[in-house]
Length: 406
Ligand SMILES: [Zn+2]
Image (cartoon, rainbow, N blue to C red; front, side):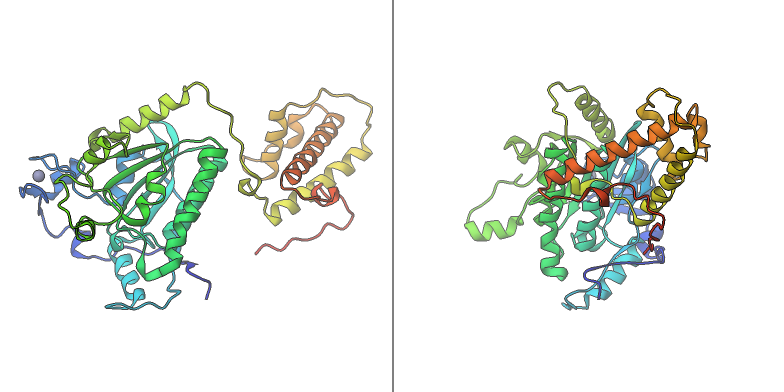
């Protein structure tokens, strides 16, 4: 038992259910009851032609709607839920998972990834209502947290489109703790790295999602008529023994009470998000953010080993070369590009092409080595620890340790 999450090695494909194949040609508007032709409805972003009611949209359609064609890169597609409590209500939780996976073709109820929104790179998470009512289980929480941390590392603006019935009851406390976990990651993203998070609330957004990240956006927008609340209307009415207003828990009502910043019709949503981000980019008095140590890129053992070996190679070649020549101090850009070559992120370029001679090269490496150690010392001071210098420098021992990739 690995806990509430596993990684499924096989990508699942959606089964041919009536919903997936679009067997029915027609549907009915939930608000005005008009009969709508599904094909036209899809082309019109699921907005009723008669009354402008915003019908539900799948997460895949949302991604298509919001992200520029061909630029979507999904993250953590294969994370899958487990059944830590071995929970059974009317049927076992594992059966419910299987059904939802067959219906949606997704491992769990969240699509996460990066893409361009009118040319602006964003990290986007979209909840899927079709997957057990968009409930937030461990996988949804984990994927969101990873997405947020990725956005923080890469300095991306973050957008989360919520639609949810709340926490997933079948996972009990594992589901509830996601609220704190996601909020913690958002705290780093928003308050420490000073990056933007826009929360988009669609109908319905209730329960634990509203109580955590849904309402934590720097800007909170909603679609017209969306039902947004914590407890349901019926529960509140029974508890208070009072009649609630007719528009209670609608987006417009919450906007009026100051809980939302904007209500944006779906047809303008992408454009509005673009303008918000574009506007934010030029906002004055923005303080420079700082990414805390724990969220920094971690170097994998194999990468470390590569760096170590390369360093050894460099230093030994530096020792044999004539060290008298004084090359100009290499620019930051040169150092970065040499690192990229080393890590294989770019096409193989001979690293010596970047430098005039070997002496200059050795000096560049010395700068890189010193600044790396300084940076790590600074980080360890921040963490209050006393780290031995040697363990953080590129080791140059004769016998490089072989790291085992897990
Ligand atoms: Zn309608």
